[in-house]
Image (cartoon, rainbow, N blue to C red; front, side, top):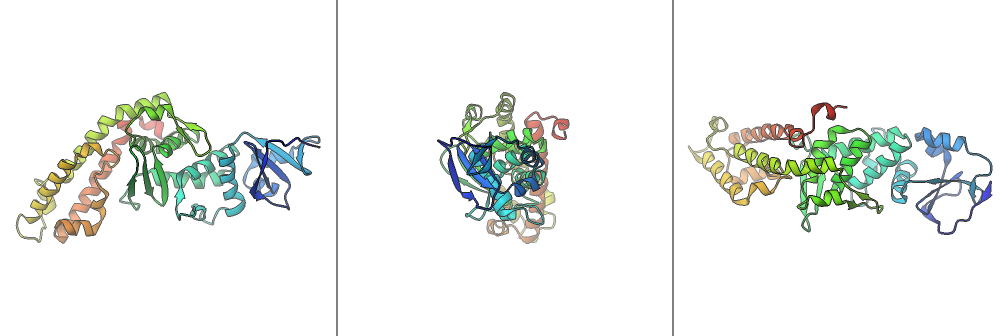
Length: 336
């Protein structure tokens, strides 16, 4: 083996242990880690180290391997494999950032590297958590907390994962196609449509590692086609949700005659004044309807309260089942 000229390469202080056997180089950054750790999760790394040849590059006597991955992606993968590890349930609960939540872009980095090197347990754990985050099912999860910043940028927290839109949504769409998680597509494409300027999805958005993520021409066309359909779906859901003529909802009403029907009419007017069609990210109209204190505040009696919640859940399910059609995604492509 020979010592290589390492000009322009800097060592990563976080991953530079003494009792190690290999140095990985990614984008000019060197990571020194134990062979056994990587070999235990990745057959690709195991074969790579096993088949190392005399005369290959070294760093202070350690074999050196140059990788095509970004330093950001590799560091995030190593953080999981070397520092944190998988827990017994493999649900990524120990991968949280300092802010206390998982971050979608970090999970995506882990999936990219783990998938490439066939570290299947790691890839599946991260991918499963992304799936929970993009799958909008507030009747089974904790709903979405939305925080709007500058125009075109939204931070979303769902299932304990922080998602920044639209960049994370674009990344998830492309990742879904790479790892064949087609069931993500309706939800991820829906999130892509949160941006005002859809052309940015095609021009591309810069990832944390400097790489540019852009939708394919086909997926971009799907989003442009879907926006008016999503607007119509949002309006349809709202009108059906707050339909005061739906006597089924009030059949066990315990309030004074006509009171809950009046509340429903007020909600319908309020949504009409807000311009429902502009908020296509929430096809179920408003997360506040899942909050019991909000429903008490608007004035429903306890019985209408409960029926209203079940009504909303049913309409949400119906709306979300229409997403594949909005994006012209055939059912068989989602099940591949």
